[in-house]
Image (cartoon, rainbow over all chains, first blue to last red; front, side, top):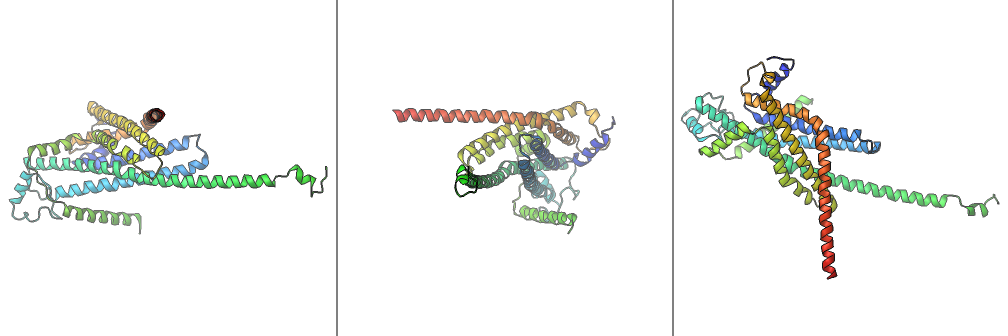
Amino acid sequence: MANFLTPMWNAVARAYGGDKPGKMLIHTGIIGWAMSSIAQIAAIVLNDKIPKEQKMFMVPQEAADAAANILSFYLITRTFTSVASKLVSRGKWLPEAVKNFLLKDTKIADKIGKSGFDVEASGLLSGNLLDDYKDFRRGIDVTSTLIGTVISCNIVTPVLRNLYASHKQKDSIKRYNEYNKKLKQNIHIDYYKRPTMADFQSGSSLKI
Amino acid sequence: MNVTGVSSRLHRLANSVSDKIVDHIPAFTPSSKKVLNTVKWIGNRVSSPQNRLILGVTALMSQPFIDLYNTNVDERTREVSAARTVAKIIAGTATGFTIRYMTIAAIDKFEKFFKPTIFVQNMKQYKMALGSILALWVMVGTNFLIDAPLTQYLTNKFINKIDQNHASKAAKTKEVSNG
């Protein structure tokens, strides 16, 4: 049943209807990170209790934090998925039955596992063996994406974020203390500069 | 150098790095039916809702400890940030998993409406992908309506609990020192 949204369904089918679910997990992960960061930024912008000067600092800070999170998520997870995909497509990681079948072909036996070889493109697999290969590839794709996601989101990103936040906190405390120090000095000077009754009574032309 | 040039250089660099890693990883040829069936099951069953759940569970096992052992900040900041992290994980995982699961279930139920008109190699993967994408749109609203207030509520609950623990510990220490 075609409807006004069918072009969108077709676009999703073209991009993610294949046998590589890891790609979808990475892309939706990135969009999820971005949307959550936009929500955080919007919450700052719309919060009346935060002064404008602080907003000017907090919005770029949140945006930088989001960019770092997304970049580390993409780089780490993408590396895991890419390595796993190459391991399977080159034939370095394969179910034993599939590998034994490929090794029977003397023309390609020494190419298996090496750069430039592609199990599926070789066209040697068919029927159950091809299905077994695709099931294995899909499982490794999802597993590697999961491992990459866990490492980037649950270990690398929190450690980096804590380092950045503690650095920012120290910086803010230092600036706050400097500001307070200057403020105290100013009050001190103002206090002694302020005219007192004594100023008018002695050394002044004004006599009461 | 333009953006395309930089991106293609980065792509080549990433490719050569992953090639080097692949060369150093030993071969793996599982023969056990149990291992092969587990890998197959993960490929067919694990999608974004399960991914979110696994991410949440592993986050609970790692992130609060990273916060608690962050020696760059004082003890109170560590406790508050760990409490907020736990609250954020619980709120985010609960809503993230539920919404993803429900959108995929909705696509299954109203399959005709969501059916593409082109050939799809793997219909199951398509439904999971579409469900995950639609879930992201739903989560634009729930981030504000559920996640943020729930995180705030849970954070306050956890901080109160931490304060109560400190108070009872302090009372016990006082009792001991008073004899």
